[in-house]
Length: 301
Image 1: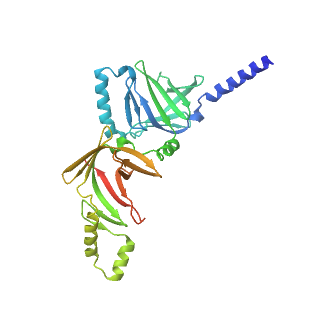
Image 2: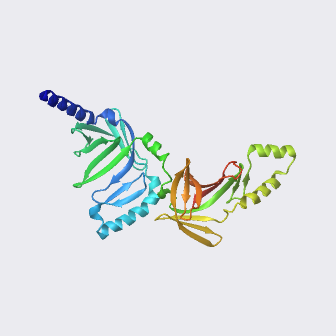
Image 3: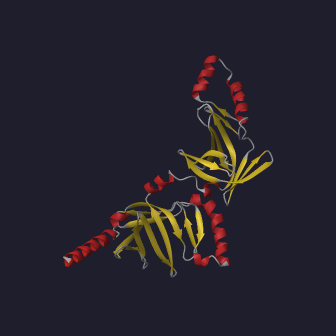
């Protein structure tokens, strides 16, 4: 009986190892960059938009200076980095960082619980393993180990749908571009008012003067109070609110509540916000339950 148990345990172990081996089929498709650890120096989390020092490098002045430079550059460069690795049929792959695909052939060798990827015309072996659904890409760089982790786009999209706005996308200055209330939009830059088709049709039926109506609505929309406002988000979760020469500085946190995202200040005040397509939005709920008033901010260049 004991002998049977030993044989059974061995078979289970063998099956586990076989299942853990990475094959070309496991790799096929797109994987998006999640984290990067440079050799013995910095750890970048692209999901959380954060940079941390590797423990044994924290004490050196060179490492601290590199961290400052990378953190400063990361905020501007993050949007430009579309890191991904794509595996194609026929043993071909492309590692992409800035929108340029360099498709190469590769040879895959079995390393037990992982695989070794050898690019065409190269003697280097990149170790690949899939751990809890993440692809780990480990490469030797001048004798030091650099590690990238990737995840499937669907996994990334599902997680991002649940997470608040990352701090890195907010950092910098923002100024109002437009305000929309009850479907009518006022552009702070041009002074133009855009009316929904329904309101324009109703005004025409009543014989109203459209330019006069737009001028009246422009005054009403400007009175909402965001003209001249500038918002600056800084490192350390600090927000500066500039309004008519006055500056209010406070710490903030980004929270998720009842399916919406809010910026919360220490005094309990909350701003309902959104971030989409490079624009920051403040949403003011209608007291009567109507659609939110939406103020769209653009990055100050």
